[in-house]
Length: 265
Ligand SMILES: C[S@@+](CC[C@H](N)C(=O)[O-])C[C@H]1O[C@@H](n2cnc3c(N)ncnc32)[C@H](O)[C@@H]1O
Image (tube, rainbow, N blue to C red; front, side, top):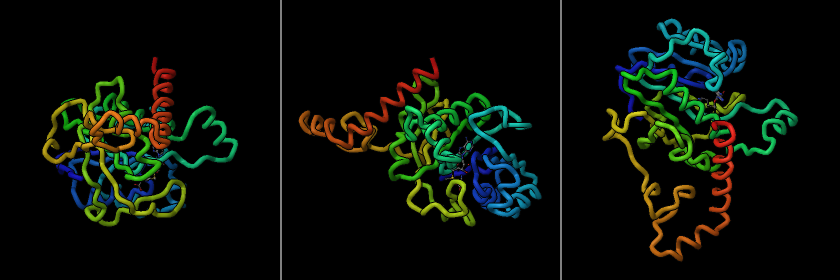
């Protein structure tokens, strides 16, 4: 992952604030505002106050109870003043109860709920958080294993919008000393499987152009849902399209398209 120290940075959903703290110490960005979904007392109970205090002592704003999908929770955040926004390893908060799970997942899959969270995140980055005259970059870092890769981050989140997917970078945690990837609502580290940082902008060209990879499975003769190919014959392709793996991804995709149609008409 590349970080330009000239950027004014906003972090979203930064569990224990260790990512923001490491970002500040290692890259010294021009400005850093860190946000977490938890309230202040949950942060202290789960992770202690040390990252919070160190960030605040160095002049960073830290906003708690910040839900990226709900502008009523953004408090005094100054809008349109950031160059780059980061959401590291997004995951929905744990459900409060079986009833809560049933309610939220009524006729809808967890896959769709995660895509909804990430689409909201991207739309709000470009509508509210990013300065249109700044670097104009929104980042999502996620794991390259199921179920995360089934969210189809590169192609599904920006449908019918003016946001472009620009490419990805390998996320190398060793470049962020002290960063502990936290599991949702548990004081545990998420297993350190490989991470990928996906990059979005309203621009088609940015300062990251020569640092980004465009995966080969996004080309025409591949299946980008399942990341397989190239298909050399039509028969190859048809065999894949009827496979169980593809059918499952196609169902997720259809559910997502229905969701966008239903909520964004
Ligand atoms: C797997 S944890 C990763 C935490 C942290 N980013 C890290 O890298 O250690 C997923 C995070 O996403 C946050 N999150 C989920 N929904 C959110 C929302 N609507 N707004 C802001 N953060 C959210 C959770 O609170 C949680 O901290």
